[in-house]
Picture 1 (cartoon, rainbow, N blue to C red):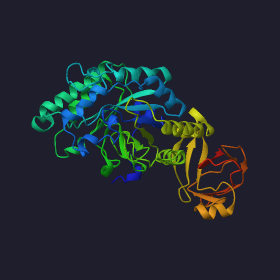
Picture 2: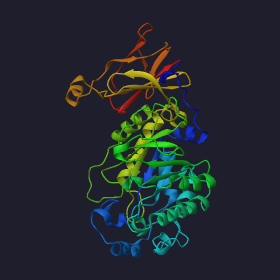
Picture 3: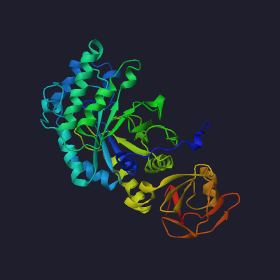
Picture 4: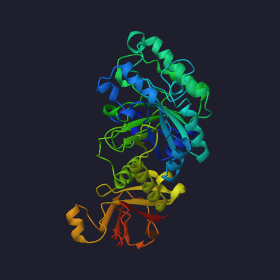
Length: 423
């Protein structure tokens, strides 16, 4: 007898993957020599800067504003549970001591210190999980084109340094395989290095904008959605449970771009976090530090405001981190998560005050919000932000729940409003 998809079991996640899913929100940091140019992380490539000229910036790379401890404190206040830092980007410059593998590293600059060591130490002091981005593409190593086998050995040796000199690392985030889609990247060998030295580390390899959510090598622990809202993964019948992560950036560049004024607002980040959690995915929110390594003021303010919002929704043990997706659909972008038998309804597009404002902004305003696929009744519904008790009706035959969403009280607008329904 054939087994249909609904009968195929969902695999149990490994502990490291289950823990990663509960982190919910992380900080992505793109920082390197390109930060001194202030035109984004691809400045060398897209502005055709010769390698010799580009690496002259090593002479002015002081890292005087970089503090792993300060960054970790910001992440903690923002509700971020992990930070993924670019240990080496496509320009071939490394923030760590490459132990003679390359002349292009932070120890050959006026900074004269291992910035990954500083980063990891700062994260541990604040209870933040350190993760490391590492490019697989290299614009400056000639072996990338002329001796790919030799280059891949260099890549593995580089990653082994990261695996063996900084204690426990939460994960490794690779990026660049899309540059040679038909090449043999010998991923098994690369991931074997990590499993040997860091068996509990997450292994992630970014599939790029055009391949969102694509599964790859069996050792991969999480798929990626680059700037694309995640869709729920169908894990039925898969040999391994993988998690999901959306990476997004505060404007249209990943490294700092001084003339990019198109920043996301705190409201936008809150929405992206909610829609990532709707699919059970993490949000990895990027910032590009200044030339000296300091997190800019605007992003600092946004991240702190997001942290305020998370604390309003229950903080560390709340639904943002611990909630699980359910097969319940709401009106428009409304959705539900479940936690400890309670149902949490995420209500979008509420107007702060009047019906006139709702009409002018395109919001739906207060009123009935219908959720379908609800299998049981709940005893009470309250807003998380105020404790106000809400009216609701439940149709057990249709498995339909109607919540009567009230307006925000004057002086409040939480962007996405959450109602808790007690089980």
